[in-house]
Structure formats: C-alpha cells, structure tokens
Length: 100
Length: 98
Image (cartoon, rainbow over the protein chains, first blue to last red):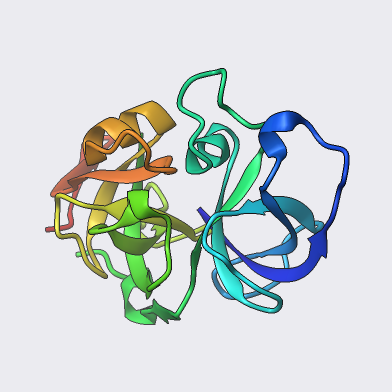
C-alpha cells in the first residue's frame, strides 16, 4: 500500500454499471517521506476522504476487493482504491542502519 | 516472499473495515550483505506477529495469501507480515537479527 494526497474529484455521468455510486478521486501518489511519485491517478474512495487529505491506497485486484468485488460478477473495473486516511506517520531513522 | 525491516508505523482512524484490528507498519527492503535498508518504503499489515520498528520481517506480497493470513475474505491487502526473521545466511555468512 502506498501513500497519496487527494488533489481532485472526477465526475462521470456515463460509466460502467458496477461503477454507479462509486466516488472517484484524483490522487497524487507519494512516497512515505511525502515526495510526489509518478503521475496523478484516479482512485475509488471507500472511506470518505476529501481534498488535500493524506490517504493510503491499494492497486490492482485488491482495489476491486476494497469495493466488495469478491466474485467476478460484482467486481467493479477499478485498479486503485483509497482504503484509509492517514492520521500520523512515525518513521524511525535508527532502524535503517541496524545490523547486529 | 520478501525480507524487509520495519522502519515505522502509521495510524489511521478511518480505514476500510477489512483492515480493522491490524497494525499498519512501514517496511523497507534490506540489502543482502550489509543488512541496511534500501529502496522504497511500503505499508504492510500485521495482525498476528506483533512486529515493531527495528524488526526484520518476512513479507508475503500476494493478495489471496494475504487475505488467508488475516483470515479476512474482504480485506483489500497484498503486503502482509508472515514471519519475523531471526537470521539470514548468505554465502556462509550468517547475520542475526533477533
């Protein structure tokens, strides 16, 4: 799972039926040190996140699982889903050099 | 499967219900010889092992196995901790981590 910042909203009136009612947000993927990484992507929201919030998201098949897609029939065509809002990050620098 | 070091954690009140009761740990792959971390930090899930910062862990990076470990059919996860590494032996050199 990776971090991202919500930077916008996507509205589409005509979309595939299993995408009805799914909130689509534009996110800028970030590293966990908060540096931008790659281009913005569209992600489905499962937690009610809003503009400028720091979130974490899953890609690929797991994104469809986040929207309840267990069987093929109810699997929406989603390749990124926001699954949580980050309240705080705790990175411990001392762990990086550790080797006994 | 991958070997990585736990370098931190995050907390999140609002998260997908499949992630409830799980710890959210930041992990970074380690270099083969030096045991130092290198590369990109990712977010992994820990439910069973009580891993924390400084621990060297074994990760599974595949969705179905991850859901099986968490025993949670609807968890949107792929990277899950499935063990804590005691030592690594590479070319007859053993590094102990635990």
